[in-house]
Image 1 (cartoon, rainbow, N blue to C red):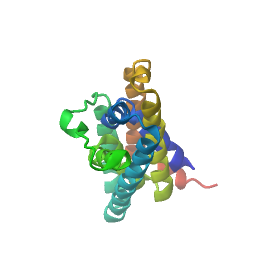
Image 2: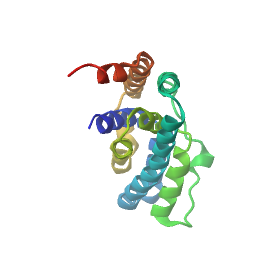
Image 3: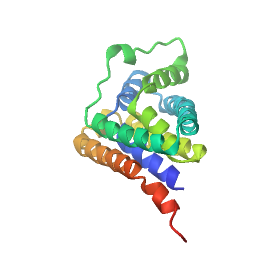
Image 4: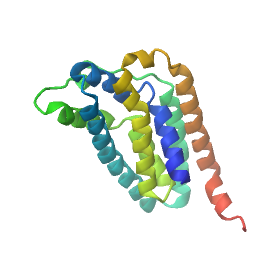
Length: 195
């Protein structure tokens, strides 16, 4: 349950003001059909984060626990810094065609926009941190939907009411704490305590 809840929180906060949230606004404004957009976001996120989770699991098997601890710690701290840098959506990434329909366009646009994004990298790191891949992917996908579905339903009116600097600060703090905990090997220390 911890893997799921941490994954939901990290991605939901990290996604606020992210380029894929901006993409949600653009898709909603262009197509004005929320249901196929939301289904496209769900399918793209699930596929993208499942692949990212597999990479995280592979990294765990490839690296020893000491190296993994340092990679995760430094990675989470880097994501904390990256979270403080606002995302911008450029026109080429937002380019959406009518050829695939609303669902298909959303699926392709979201999958591609999420490649190398901080929430995808967070999924890799979370899957490397927690042994339950399904809980991590379910959590990161849920976190993505928590952040992006309201963007589809209410458009950019909601974005102006959310203090994004505060949200980015909280997300950065969570990433930094996860990084420090990984560097200090806190999870393994608790696992070794006699119960």
